[in-house]
Amino acid sequence: MTAPAPDPATDGIEEGKRLITLGGDKGLSLAERLADRFQRLTWRTPLHGIRLKGRYPLKLIAVPNDPVPGDVRRGRALLAGMVSFRGESRAIDRLDYAERDWGRPFADHLHGFGWLRDLSTVATRAQGAPVAETLMAKWLAAYADKVDAHAWRPDLWGRRILLWTAHAPLILSSSDIVYRSSVLNALARGARHLDRGADKASPGAPRIAAWSGLIAAGLLIPGGDPRRSFGEAGLIRALGTGLFDDGGSVSRSPAMLLDSIMLLAMLRETYAARRLVLPEPVQAALNRMVAALLGVTHGDRALASWQGGGPATAEQVAAVIDASGVRTRPLRQARDWGYQRLAAGTTTLIVDAAPPPVARVVEGGCASTLAFEFSDGAARLIVNCGGARAATARLPASFAAGLRTTAAHSTLTVADSNSTAIHADGTLGRGVSSVELSRQESDAASRIEATHDGYVRRFGFVHRRQLLLTGDGRELRGEDSLLPQGRKGRVGANRFAVRFHLGVGVQASPTADGMAAILRLPGGPLWQFRCRGGMLGIEDSLWIDGDGRPVPTQQLVISGEAQAGGASVSWAMKRAL
View 1 (cartoon, one colour):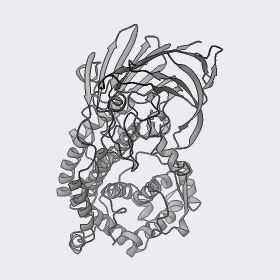
View 2 (cartoon, rainbow, N blue to C red; view 1 turned 180 degrees about the vertical axis):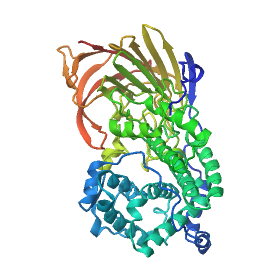
View 3 (tube, one colour; view 1 turned 90 degrees about the horizontal axis):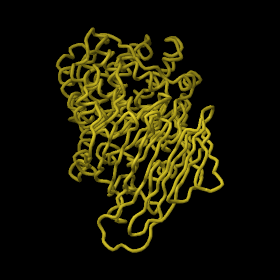
View 4 (cartoon, rainbow, N blue to C red; view 1 turned 90 degrees about the vertical axis):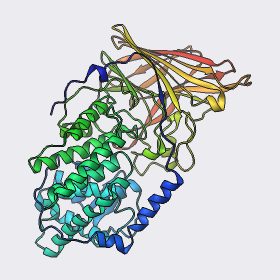
């Protein structure tokens, strides 16, 4: 489907200043935490068990297509007898759900049955069915009749229903009537669980997953029209609470938005299997979501690294966008989603111009305000380390935590501290509560000026960043300033650093005066970097790639001291060839 051309009133560049403030509270209240705990406890009661009872279907009305291909390497590992995900592997014949000796990403992959997609990508039904049925039988033995807080999470049930129905040939090919009945009975019980629990999933992709699965059950289990209508109303609500008006995820995570688009693409195929179309409000939201996602892609067609997500691979991003059926242009100025996109010539600049997400809509948020990424064609020149939630299990927990810090992003830090506090339990604390943004466009250049208040309470400074990209894309100029605000008569100096994490393969060579560097892109042009107002150094860094693996890189660091009157550093990057 081709989305309508973006309305200039909504996609045009809004020039002049605007204030972006942090909405809502930092996290769940005590009452909400207790209510959530109580809800999970009720899952174990006889009353909830009675609610899950009922007739189970003898067959599905239809089998939808899964529009997204799986991972070939993981699929081949399954055929070889191993379940693998993000650096963790378990032998299928020795897999024991009772042990739970695995990390959360692997557990979600296993319980969510995402491996069915990988298996179907590399195997015929005859090859894949024995593997799928073995893993299915193990899951049914452990959880079909046991409501478990993790395995029965609403978002995981939503994903299971979508994947079980799309890959029914792999899990329902057996001639064992008892096994087949167990699968269909579990499917029906999961739908009944979602009838009461879909809205208990976290806002964003988890709640969208829960309601999408419920709708799929209504479409594919006989007699499901009332459930389908109920689910459609719930999904529309979930999209309202999980998305901004511009289509971005309230988590501010491109990875979560990509996941949400994938879920709706699967749901779209479920409607198609019944010769129906997505409800118009859902399709309209999907159109906006794809435009917002494209707004945070680089010239290599992969994602920028924001809010704990990695870039994913260009193939993964393309597959999900193709599956959505939406064809549209990238969103250039996201007013709520928070990412500003400038593109000129062969270069693309993406800036985080909003506060971090509130804790109630995302776990593991990052202190990345006013960071940017910059690419030239398919080569990434300036990046953020990324991947706090996408890294493989081999990355130590301390490293994963470090990827959330301000220093892991291409922006300014004061006294080696975060612009928004990151607590020991992983939640975000005080810091950036508002961002003031100004943007101007002309044929000669595009300019962004933004300030945040994350360092005002502790150090008495606001951070102002000015970025100017010339119309031909061959030069990016910037200025980072610490401006006094709040505390009067503050004495002493504070060290600051402006970091520019370099893309994979970019080699930095300092000049003799120590104020500039030559940046050599792999197989591409040379860029010159020059600064004024601080000392330039070159240090080690790392970047989490599309497969969640850490890759050694370098970073440019401009360091200096800010006195009570503030400080300012100017810098420029110019393409030499």
